[in-house]
View (cartoon, helix red, strand yellow):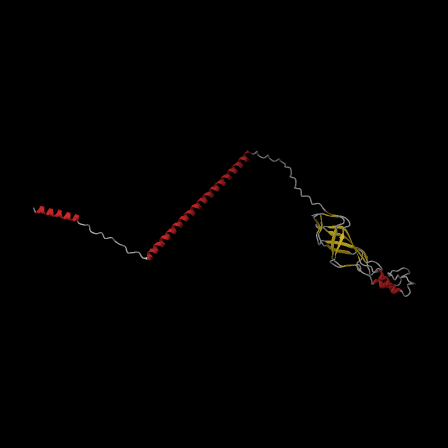
Length: 290
């Protein structure tokens, strides 16, 4: 009976335990977050988002470069294929072409290349104007027939758009006539020069004919009057000098004194150095181009 009683009590106890309420569950509560922690977590989140975007951008750039590289390789492969095809086609054409004929034992000499014909000469027609700048001064008082006259072209000599002689090229002539107002009573002072050569553009001297004439005013009336004054002491009989124009109308005007006085009177033709004289060619001439 005691054994039976003991078992009954154990069963009762287990039943009581089963119906009893379970022990309370104690939840662990974390301490509240501070404002600094919240800001730190937000900053970390933004940094992570930025890093993700940068990685995405880098991946896109890498993909784009890869595509460009593939396209460049494809283009080169295409060009190489075209070049290879052209080379193959050329080789096939050469293979089908007949072999060149063998040269003869003695080949004819190839004709030498003919030089280009020289340009035609420049024809300077008669009546062409030329401006000459004198190198030295010339005067009818000192010049003599045969004296050489040197000058230079004052401007280019151009005919038909072609330059026959350049400005500054030497021009040469000679005095062909001189009449001095100091040495000839009643004469008109006259200087005549004939320019007879110039240096062409090709360096050769070319013969020309371009005369120049310069006269001064005559002092014949004054000369005659002065002669009368020096010789009136017995050399003139009557009224042999016209008082209207001073010219001699008769008789003999002798005596060295009168002539000597006349030698110091009258005008002169004086052309200073650097004077530009304009002449006209009297005949045509030609200049070889080159």
